[in-house]
Image (cartoon, rainbow, N blue to C red; front, side):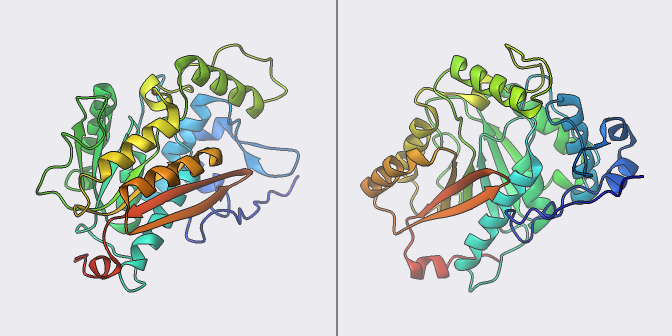
Length: 317
């Protein structure tokens, strides 16, 4: 009988509960259906086939049950199934960023309010942020079906009802307009922007991803259902860079209403242009936080229009 081992993923944030891999014995206890998809690979590590959408979704459901106390979570067909360890990393690094403005202490509780731009159908960032640090969230999306599914998730998990509110962005050319009102004060804004410039580019990328996940399987020409993601999740005119530049320009209209504006940047080649755009709106502070998940390197860019003194005077409680 093979011994089963898990290796530490040292690239993940030190507080990330998924740093030591997946405890499939516990996960399958909580979600027995996942057990059908678990096997021991040639490296004696328990795993699943990550090119199988059903396996990935069941893994997510089990992780949310086991590590975050979410008993009821599902997504519609054709919507993105997010990799939870990487999403959790963004939340933990955000917590470290907020601590810089709070005398080194991570602020927790409902008075910390985050705005998730493009919450998707999975509601994953608000779920993780609330479960881990007790933060409250507003989630926005231009896709009504995505908003409706998030609403189902919230209603099916009573502890989320008071913690997460949702709002559809009805004008797709804007990011903050219609969303941030004069009375709003957000501790942070987070965003995982659409990556691609077109639907064709998005489909090619997803097809390549699925083929790479299972190189021994027959190659596919189109991504399988429930794996590819919706158009609004994957692409927009101008791609990632265009979206982030729009976000930066709009952020300058709400300089005192948010402590930290942040966004993931998947393409490092975009950073130079992002810094140039930020220089035009003149925030008081700009930071780039590097994150590494497995072989993939990612990062988020954060900016604040508040001076150091104003940041320190921000009310977290």
